[in-house]
Length: 343
Image (cartoon, rainbow, N blue to C red):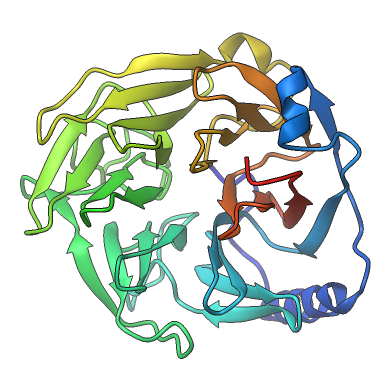
């Protein structure tokens, strides 16, 4: 989703931010924010309405793409305008993990959001990044515990045309990569950008042999993406203010499909910050989706069970390995919420 603050940030401020974040994370108690709204009794089995929403890190430009790495007991997340990935641990708080993260060119980037966005692990435990500035899906060619800004391209074009700016992604158990490609990493962040080569904003699959398949070009601003259990259906967020919706996309091999509506929040966003953006789906099919006003919680049939209501725009979600902890990138902050049980 678009950042709403300028890219420019002095080096001294970045250094101060990192120090402040580390200091914050050493505290035994954290500042809190937001409220939880129950809209259906089923929420009680997922989230206690009295649960606190902790601010575990803050001071970023636009935080995105959180990823819990169980083996390292760390949360990684992108600051897209700063072209940086941060690492948070309970022990050490916030530290710079990788820089640059999404744009590796030698000339200054013209993009307001050149960094990495969505982050995920492949089947071998390698870090895979949606790289706005380099306009590709990339894999870090270094171990997780010794990060380095060296990347291999997993996909960077469709039919010879460069991608816009890969935004969010998910693997299936067969190792195929699915990702969304809106224009938010382009200099003007819109479809009229002169550097845009593909005339639409697509959802793609990268096959194991590296071939890129277009699954749909019928979602105006495809953003967050995740599989429902069984991996037959994708849920895709649309961060278009005129169609603030979530869509279902049935997967049938390499055959393009027409998305169907899962839920529309277009008429429910007045006065609220944020749009449908990053999302995660649990092993049982519960959906946590950033959207207008915070995080929306759905059952797999599209019924809204409740919301985590936040003042600033939520951009994306991560779940711990046991699915009992929720992490939320929330504009300049990163939040943590303890769930009642694995939902």
